[in-house]
Amino acid sequence: AVHSIQYTAVQSPLYLFAAWDARHSSWLSWDKLAELAAQLGLPTVPVLFRGSFSSLQSMQQMMDRHMVQPGSSVLGGPLEGFVVRLVTDIAAGEFDRCVAKYVRSGHVQTDASWKRTWKAATIVLGQEHPPECRPLPRHQPTNAAAAVRAAAGAAAGDAAAASVNQDATASGSSSSRSS
Image 1 (tube, rainbow, N blue to C red):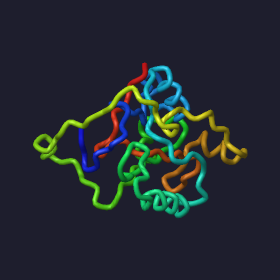
Image 2 (cartoon, one colour):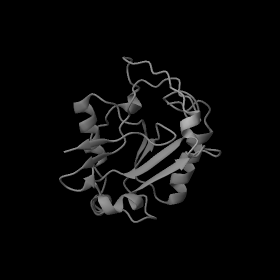
Image 3 (cartoon, one colour):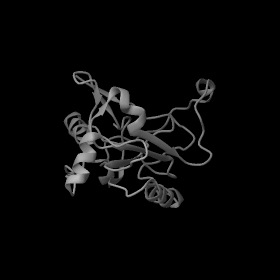
């Protein structure tokens, strides 16, 4: 569907950003999600950054830099926003503490009128996905402290071991279920 931004380089009707693991009642880690995406032949949302931030301010500065670059979306058009998530598995009850969405100023909120304003988007299939949409090599924490933070999960104010991903759609991308 066409949202507040019409992307001009969308190459798949579905970009994975999360997948539910019903056996473990958790959301897959980013690496497991990338493996699932590769097995299914589906792209992930573009990854703009993967690593640790020293503070929320440093994460904010990185996102602000990306937001002001004209035509910065690898899916064509202006950048709409980001999804920020931990790279580790996320327990069912921890999703709201481990995943956040950052959207551009003036972002259109979905409401009851979406049924009246919905328009089909043109999607050109069969093209090569940009490198940002391909699975990344496995990430290894650079030190023991980072490994402990990644394994334990970060507190709401701790952005360590975060992966910042471009949000593919205004209302949220579809997810895949894993059994």
